[in-house]
Length: 273
Length: 152
Picture (cartoon, each protein chain N blue to C red):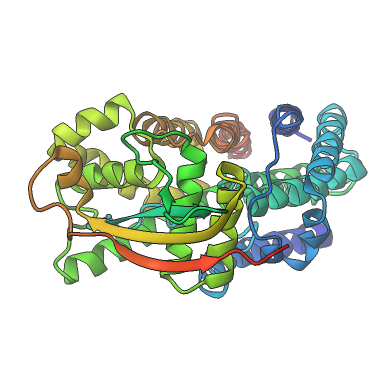
């Protein structure tokens, strides 16, 4: 396993253990409809609080074990299974958002890391990390495409759409009525609606182009900063905190092992030439 | 090399499933996605019109309804406000079981003695409304549903 790749995998599991530990004291008030639960989560609905807490505890320990010993398949599997069950249960029962969705996907992908001593272990490790990066980039791409499709539909029907000058101010106002949250930046934008046009157009462009990040390893750090900046902006404007999701983006792209692997391969090619 | 190729195919299939599941789950699942697939269509549509839902309850032994005094302008509890908006949206879309369960669940927390529930909706231009411009609203709120609690 290359040094940077191993460091990144350890950091991912260490963060996973930390975010699970922070959930241990979180209140669980199940006001939603338990019948909404998919079949593999129905057992949580009967008595959610102690079961979700137990899952958070299993996740904390298994992720910590995987951080200490990234080659331990059982620890990675336990982390993925408990993360799916915990995050799924919280999502359905307590109106939790999408903050752990990509974490759950990445945890499942990381189970496919090669065993110690396996042939092509380094390449296989990089392949799995690349799939994790692609899964994250894919979600941004889907978000960008849905905004573009909705903008086309709304423009066709003569409505204010994503490329209208006051679009971001409308989104901010809508968020206020939907959730009761209005940040100082949001309040300022309500008074200066046209100021939102360029940032919103740039967000849509960034999201649509995000899948290209998988093909541009030299720019991974830049992509990481851009994704982190996007979430910082969303938090400042709409008060939507995607802390753990943003941390995943920063870890995967700012801590990407690919710029190094790329450089090593280029150097080897030059030596051979 | 064989294991590497097999792993590569498995990962490519997982990513394809993730993309397809994200788009499809929003269509097949009522109201929400199927975890962990996400369509990620947050704020895709710019809210030209906003609907605000209000929940009112009648308490046991009383005749009149009490509306929960929650608006974004004076949020008593943002989580309760958000749940009532979710419940109203579900009822507005005809998803009775979910809407009523959400509304009753929230009402039980705020007013345990509630025996009858009423959900009303009000539509307006969100930006104009926040800026206090005239012509923001559609007029009087419309009553969506009124129902009695089933004895448990």
